[in-house]
Image (cartoon, rainbow, N blue to C red):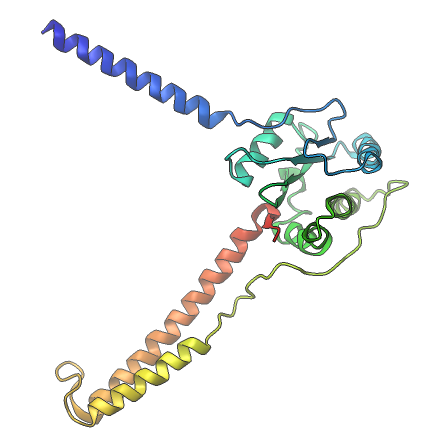
Length: 268
């Protein structure tokens, strides 16, 4: 009896230890430390000194007038974390933006993974929507990053975000640069799937149905035989195919919305 109780106690201790380890591991990511300048942490060494000074100067003025902060962070890699997890933890740990207004923005670039994300606080989500942050990446940042021009890409993206925040608070920061639209570089499905392969499959299926139905050996039973059975099956195939097409379109739109969440995108 004593042995059984002892084994149970050991089991509970092991379970508690494992649970504690998992809890600690999941709640604490190996994120980069906050720098003295706070507004920029170029741990991947992708930015010039001039760009860092510019980001710091613009942020000082922005914070004085609005409490908002646009923090730029570059990392060598995400150390096994997903981009979303890393950005969320970094945003929360550093306390970006005014505590009451929650109007911070994080621009995060992961060098080795070649990924970029714009994380937005609740106070600015009405201005920097998922769609808008996605567009900023597509048109202001990623074209530069594709050419490994990280300094100009991040600076251009920072300017685009800064302009949106300026408009939100109806202010103009002296010395702020205009962001330059470079063009859309990421290929995103536009909500209409490529239906050509499906049409080809449908035509082949119809031809097969007609061929066999004329011999009276196809779809005997619920659909009936002969021409009537073939026509009815063709009608059902068309109905189900159209329904599937609409469903695929909805799934694509849902995927695009998820892909825009936080504005992240892979850099080829």
